[in-house]
Length: 483
Image (cartoon, rainbow, N blue to C red):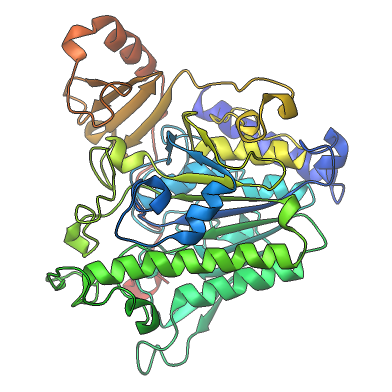
């Protein structure tokens, strides 16, 4: 599908949705996938959490009891992928259902906005009668642009707009919808109000306020992204337990110094785990547990020691090669846990190979509505509920595609085709090829021995993408990096 036809299909979808007015699309298209009231959807996303950062994925040093329990009570995916190797493009694929060769935000500048014609998951669910709330890091449009959450389908927003602003855990302000709210104490004393705690509190309020109606809660945490800071009550659990090399911010780097970076990273993840446990307990106390699907994942692979995170020490990629920014598995394969008591089989594991762009059609199906046409995603409802409950077998991707670099002359690309994984580091370089079944660590490039596989992937790559717009933020106020 060409870029122009994609844009036309999205605009047509918006017009049809607008014509529906107050009538939820769910009533026009039938019941939800469960046959009853559409379920609440809670989507929790960590920032820079690696495939191996959780106990249920093999972590030995960091305590994550609530996420481990969530996996034991639900489904743990072993071959799920982010949308990209870095923040903004990954979030764009999640919101639009389009992979990085088609989605509108492909660079990681920090403030490039979604386009007015983009159709987001929130818009689809809002038209289906859902209350929609976003609490945390957005990264798809700064203030005064068409990309702000309240112009992209969210009823409520609290958190960070520009992702560079989200690097700070004790910011001077956060955004509530399109209004800047200053945080007393952070301006004067710098470290009084920990932003993560404020975001969790707002998410709880949203659940309580909307407990009588289907809701979509998108909760993109900033933990454990640098800057590596955490309140003392969490740091105490790990202080002094690891050999440490104090992190000192490099010239022109804005991250705060951290005398115990390993302890701080571990404490950040455990604090996030604690709060996820509290959210699950809240759902149960409000009698929403049985009609709420909760999904947890990460936006990309783990960050390295250069920003204090020290992914190697924690074995944060597990058996995978690479880290954040890499197109190898460690940069894009992420944890995914889905819990829905009575619907998703407890203690189950799935090796289904999917990616962020699958959540658009998945959530649309759960809501009993239709996603926009021309997307790249495939619903994973049959995997989540089982083929019998879903009424069909799980469809599988012939190809999964990722790219970084934006400009065609700087493009890096990766493709998964069945058990094969191809990586091209630069446009003038040949494809590397790995068999993930026998070589999940991508150590043995077998391209020379499999010319027919390379030929098929090369053929796919010729039509895998459309040209991207330049990765340039809109002009900011007074020359500031964010507004």
